[in-house]
Image (cartoon, rainbow, N blue to C red):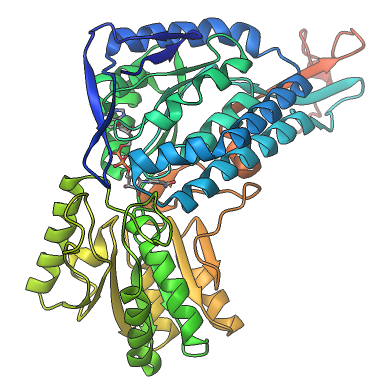
Length: 493
Ligand code: NAD
């Protein structure tokens, strides 16, 4: 039985209730964690608010040293943390080793970025005036995190929030809190109460955190439905919000590329982490002149994907996160096939894997833009392939969406690439290079895929607010103060 981390101490829930965390690859119970409620939320926010008073004043160079120290600790226990991520989340170990390293690198990046600049000096309006902008932390930040990249999506909030001088209350997903709890004692280096971790469910502890009067900002990654619920709950309190929400990313393949390479890139974009990536390729628009050949190659790559226990070697894909999600994927495919779509491969539970929430990567054709599979995020291993006449049709269909998280194109034709880039709403646009991230550049969604950005300087500014300071270093009465000199106005004015 695990405990939560509040004010630098391990504590149980005030309700004394707990819940089980299972392994999606084996369906075995891994551990129990406390089921936090509003009272626990109060305690965590109180601890964070108390810690903020000191933490906000810690000089940037000291903060950076602590962030580098934390990154080293993370690297030192990378294998154990990656194993825990695999056990609770089902991603292959090889992907989780990457995830841990990306987190460490992100802490290094923000430690230095925040140390480098804390605002700017601007040109004054008058002589003797000094104008500068100080970027200040908000105070207590709540980080609400999903299960698909439990530590990476936490880090994209935690690292810039700490670098900016905020204290933080973390609410990991109720599916994957164990890897976050593993880091609690390493996070203690930032000071008692600077980082707190509450385990529990969205409505029971997430909601009380969102509406808590001492919480200044909510940084959330998750579904659009939860994002809307959080925005509605936060609105009466005018809370600051960063929302990273769902996507339904288009993927265009033009007729001028090496189709073997495009098929491999497209399969990786579709099936990485069983399609449980916010920027998974979810809709594939292929030039009709190469459609049949591409489909053949794409299906061949997909058939070769090796499913199995994500801890084991020589596998490419693990399970889905839970049984309910698997059922939802099955229902989505059933709806599409009932409307005329055809399954070319996959579309079923792998018969050789009886335990665990496994599902075969699935390729569909005969899909139309009107089907809900093309209009809503599936968040699963389904790749619908659609032929298009050329770049205009591809771009029109790709942009025909209420989402705007990411978009992909495979082409060597510069004009096609730029035309697509300019005309598709997407926070990230990938040309021949699907799903890469770069800590130094912003990540986030247009349209309903989100508000605000993570990563880059934008992701640091999301956790600090500007204060414009006006100062005159010579005290003297200003000519524009009272009494007004009416005789200075020209007669005809
Ligand atoms: P989710 O919305 O169900 O849950 C996300 C988090 O919100 C969890 O910690 C959950 O406990 C909490 N929560 C739920 N209800 C809440 C409430 N009323 N108040 C406060 N907190 C609440 O999402 P999920 O199933 O964990 O993750 C999958 C979704 O996340 C997909 O839609 C995916 O696209 C999205 N996602 C987006 C990004 C991005 O960066 N844009 C990245 C990864 C995942």
